[in-house]
Each structure stands twice: as structure tokens, then as C-alpha cells.
Length: 428
Image 1 (cartoon, rainbow, N blue to C red):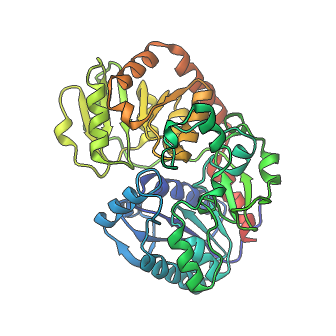
Image 2: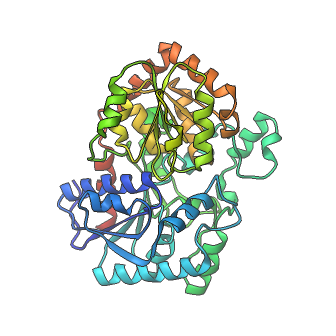
């Protein structure tokens, strides 16, 4: 076990995202179990209430994000928003970067850990401390440098979706270190502040320590190869390093609501629709497409008002403890974020992923290769194609068998613990 640092480690959940909030909480728990002094800082946001409900002490750094600004930020994010903007305004980036740096100095923070609070890419440079991150998931350079990335269903580059699959696959494996999607605002402010900028979309997802939160059997890259990787190509900060971790997904210590419990206990094929970082209209389209099947639908409504969808075969919940839901359903439909994909695999539950951006697309393609799920575009999910795919997957036991094989592999790996050990080493 790594030596516990003398000063605190700061965990920075981006509370506009449920997945990033829950993953930061899992890492915090693992750090605390190792005797580390942990402080939690956030800009606030929709899921800040989760911190309160779980009794997690935290500080608001900079102006507090309200629900409206949180929703806008999600819609501006990769895969949904225009790639020419940076999710935060220049004034917000400047304000938060300075506020975070002041907080780090005042609290004598040794290392910051981000859950997609990307202003930490600049604030840690101002405070001259390392940045650790996990939000790249599997989307790390060794995959495209080994040509392991499949052609994305939805490309972030305009007009490329009409190219042949082989050409799209080749472009995907050229690497996102060659494009500056969402980076412009960060670089304008970095120049003003006199700190290192963000040279590519790849670097937007990478820290000084990047914890690769997947097992090698699924990722296709050995831990030693991750550790040996160095940023020898353009588009990276020279300090960027990778370290092998394991699955991290939400295990929120909240009960299954009584009405949801009754719905699950009623029996019959059940599909869990958990699309937490997309629009209400997208969720409605997916539910509408699945109504043609003789299945029951449990919908994680989170921030969306979707109660009008309810009938005898559809129930809408709020923020649900997915690790307690997934083992009790027959199939899950998610956007393909690594947290939801790993929660499904950790439960032995097949998945249909509807990716919004390359990172989600990669997560889904890795599971597709394992025979435990499939990818589909949101556009196709609003058509009979989704119902046909779900029906086929429910009929064939091979999908659940493959998911249970991954479940058995996950059972031997302490993902949050491996992340905590890597972060403690960085703080030393």
C-alpha cells in the first residue's frame, strides 16, 4: 500500500453529471478507507443533493451552478453540444480556475482528482499540483495507437458519418490527439493565466495521472503497456501518464423506492432504460420504440419530468441505485457511459448502448466484442430497429452468458481501491 500523504487529497465531482458524482464518491470512500485526509469541492449542480443526502461534507468553489446551468452544461458536452465551444464560458473558466487554485493553496491540497470538472486542467497548473482523473475511462491513446478502436456510430467530425466503415475506422484510429474539439475556451484562458493549455480533445480527458478504469480482458491492452505509455506524439502534455485500474460504477447507499420494488417484484421480462445525460425527448423516443414489445420498462428519470409516460407496463423513477436494479432486470438501455456499462456487466446484465460521443461509443464497442451487448445510434433507437434488437437479445441466452463472464472477472478487481492507490502515489 502506498504511503499516506501528509496533506489532503481534493475530490472534485462535477455534480451536473450523476455518473461523475457517483464515481468520485466511490474513490473518496476508498481513499478514506486508506486513512487519507479527503476534501470534497464542487461547483454545485443538479446532483449536489446526493452529497447532502449521503452526508458527505463538501465545499462550494466559485459561483454555485443551479439546475438550469447544469442542464445547459450537459447539453453543451461532448456528443450533444457543438464541438467548437468549451461547455463553460471563458469567464466561467477563468473564475473557476482561479477559485479552485486558491482553494487548493488554502487547504494545502497535494493532488486534485477530477470527475469531469475540466477547469481543474488549469487550476492545478496555477496551484502547481498534480491532476488525477478517471473520466477518460477506456478512451486512452494506447487503444487507437494499436488500431483497436472501431468505427464510431456517431463521429464528432462533420460529414464523416457518410464515409465507408473502413475509412471511419481508420480515421478513429488516427487519434483525437489530432483535433481540438471543445478546447478553444480553455486555451484562451490558459494563455491569459500564463499556464499550460489543453492541446487536444484527448488531453481534455487526461490528467498527469489517468486511471484507466477497465480490466485488460475487456480493454485489450495489458497493464504493463498502459504504464509504459508516454506522450511521444503531438497533442499531449508531457506530464501525462496512464495507470491501470479497474471498474468503478455507482453503488449509491440509497434504497430502492417501494413503488419500484413492487414493479420489479411483479415479474415478466423487464428492461431498464437509464439515459441520465441526454434530453427528455430522447428518453421519450426510446420508451416509445420499446412499447411494441411485451416487456415492462423501468425508466431512470433522474432530472427529467417523465411521469406522463407511466402506465401498467412503464414506471418512471428518479435517481435509482442502479447496482440494486441491474441484477433484477433482463436488459439495460443506456447511453454507454462507462459507469452504466460496468454496472450492467457487474450485474451480469446485457446492454444496448446508444452512444453520444466517442468515449461512450468505445465503451459499448468493447462490450459488443465480448458478445454482451450491442451499439445503436439514438436516431435508430427511435425506430422499430431498437425493439427488434432488444427482442433478439432477450431471446438469446448467449448475451447474458457473456455478461456473466465479465461479471465474474469484475468480481476479483477492486476498481476504487486501485484508483485510490494510484492517487496516493501521485500525492507522495
